[in-house]
Picture 1 (tube, one colour):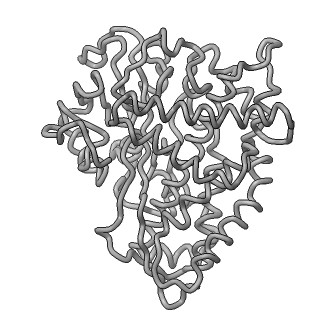
Picture 2 (tube, one colour):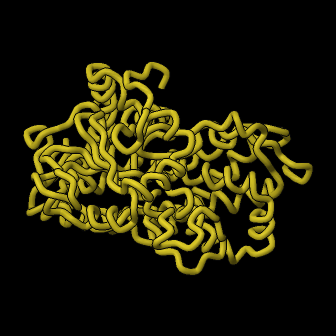
Length: 407
């Protein structure tokens, strides 16, 4: 963001901002410091926001659906009230849904995300990775985030939804709007959201006119209590799948490549021990978990001595939970063969990521295909790596140099 309206953070315990350049560049020291002296930080920004940073506290909030509502999960300057996004449904079910509707909405989507349909997408994903890598053949240096990582989940989700592949570039713009442009004037965001909604409504109308075998048609045909879903819920669920399924996986792939570019010993292990890939994927997800979720406080109550007020925001930093030394030995060290690894990269509680099988498959295939083509690579210039702002963290520019054995 070039036009920031929020001043730089001076004290992370009392004035944090998840879009601040210091947080965006490297949030881990911030979380480490807060974990020691202020495990529940507070900020007046965005109308009042709380930040627990230990695994225990993050887990407690994630499992508590009495004191916290999920009706809005992205912190911004506009804090919605119950009249804007009425519980228990919310704008983008099931992630914005509370009990009891959450279980109904999740159950409706679950069959599409089981291992079997995810496995059916693997050949497409693998070919997409190979096609992207073929376009970089012969280049001594290129941007692995822009030319590779960013395209993979976009292509997969667009196919999953049954939208035109030539519209994939639009999805990256939509994601930037929802997750990163939280610091822009509200009227600008509302105009951009209207454009996104119009695009989604046009795709839904096309699917109604021309039914097909994809996730959008599944949503259109789905019924709850014998009633078809209103178009607003179909659209909201599609937007959820777009955001949850693209930016997160894009970030995980990019962060994993960023790590491997700097750790040749890990690249060599994966090359010589292919059976290690499944365990390595879990460790890379733990160490570089991309997602920080949000909740709204549902009712006034005392949280470990802190006066939580109805309507306050609360950030749920799952990446901070994954770096808690009380849970993980040597949490800041990537150990590709880490055996005890019950990480929170996909969240905790009833809102644990529905698409975890899909994300794991995409990350595994993306790394397998990359290392098969480019076993030897490094960062072209570490200072040129940039990271996304907001609640999903991953490299947005990742210039790499290919070694002499690449290509």
